[in-house]
Length: 99
Image (cartoon, rainbow, N blue to C red; front, side, top):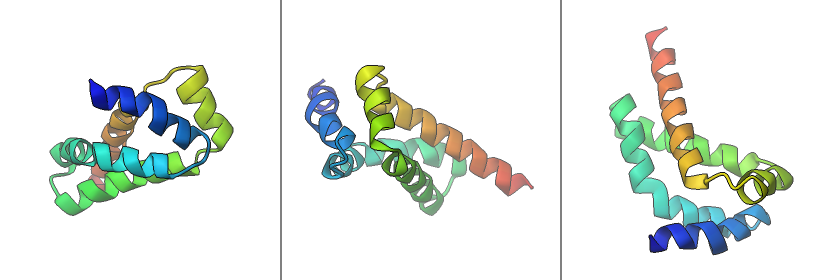
């Protein structure tokens, strides 16, 4: 629960103000769980790491006003959003492999 509170306040505020140390903290906090989710799909440590990195890169490239709107105004849970992004990116990787 404490991680959740920390994530929703200080880290989120830093991240939404384009202070990317907030994203770095977020990354370090969630990396093991997100890699585990990705690994369940792609079955490769390296690919799982790439999937997670791609998802964080998408967040990093998101304009500041969109970050603020999603995570503060609309109260979208960034952790939940990242898990969905990782799942979807993993499924996309599997589709590419099949082709």
